[in-house]
Length: 311
Image (cartoon, rainbow, N blue to C red; front, side, top):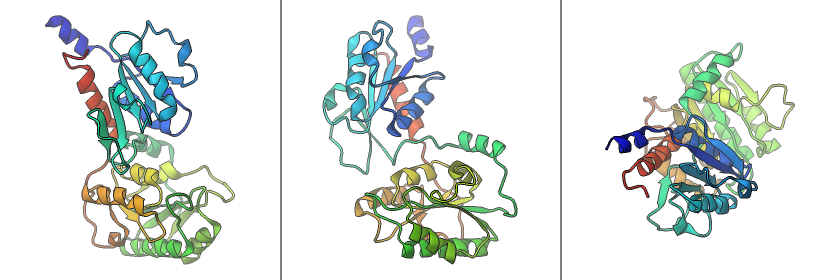
C-alpha cells in the first residue's frame, strides 16, 4: 500500500509529439496541466528516442503525430498514449482520443469529447498580460473586445456583417459608457474593414491585421482587458478562446457563416459559455460558465494513469 501511494504522488513525465502547427498547442496545453516540465519533440525525430526511458504519458495532435505516439506507447513499460484530433486510423490502439464534439466522431470507448477546441487562453495568462500591457490611452473601461474573422471554409464576414457588428459595438459603448477594442485577422477582407471603420462611432482602438502594423497584434491584450467579448462565429478557434477567457461572450452569426459551425455555437449557448450577438445590448447579467478543456482533459488523464490497475 505504501509503495502504491508513493507511485501516485510521483511527478508525471510527459512527452508531446509536435507537428509544428497550431494543433500542437492543444497537446502542449494539456501536457502543461500534467507536468511542470513537459518535453516537446518533433514528429520526425521519434525514431532517435531512447525507448528505454519512456514517459508516463505521450501526447500528439493530428494524424501526422499518430505513428510516433503509438510507437512510444507500445515500446515498453507503462506509457499512456493520447492523440488529440482524429488520427484517421488505428483508433482502438490509443489509450485516449480527444475530439471536439461538434465534429463527426467514431463511437469508441476511448474517445473523449471536448466543447470547442483546446487552447492556451486562461485567466493566469490574461492576468500576466495585464501586468505588461497598459490600457490604451484616451480610452476608458469597461471595454468591449471585438474579434473579427473573415473569408475561409467557415464562411465570411461581409461588408454588411461588418456594419452590423460595428453598430452592435456602438450600442454597447453608448449604453455602458464603454470603449471598443477591435482586432481583425489575416482573413478579414478590406471591404469589411472599411465598412466597419466607417460605421464605428464609439471610442475605439482599431487594429487591422492587414494594415500598417504600427503596433504588435493586440489580440491577447484585448482579451485580457475586455469586460465583454463579441467574436465572429466563422472562427471556431476564436470562439473557443473567447469562451476560455472568463469574460462575458457573445457570438456573431449570420447567413454568411457556415451552417456546420452553428453546432458549436449552439453547444456554447446551451452550456452557458456564450450568448448570441443580438443579446449584447440587453441588460447585462453576470458571466456564466467558461471553458477550460485543457484542464478537463488533463484531469481525466490523471485519473487513468494514477489508477491502481493502470497496466
